[in-house]
Image (spheres, rainbow, N blue to C red):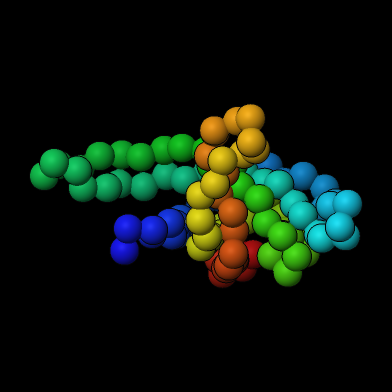
Length: 102
């Protein structure tokens, strides 16, 4: 499993760009989620809080386009560099689940 690149994270939708299309006509939407949790590390509990930049294409982009800020989401996907020039990581959402009531 040396090529593993799978991410599952839950959080709150805090930023949602407008749905747009690439020059090839593919639906794309950039968004950010806020994640807060407690994790076990080195035998102790650690509070984790972070904002995660993400992008969704096609079906997931259209799903998110109708979402409201503050919605609870669970994202499955993979990490990739933002661009050829930027090594900053972006979560590419391949599956999105909304929390109950969202």
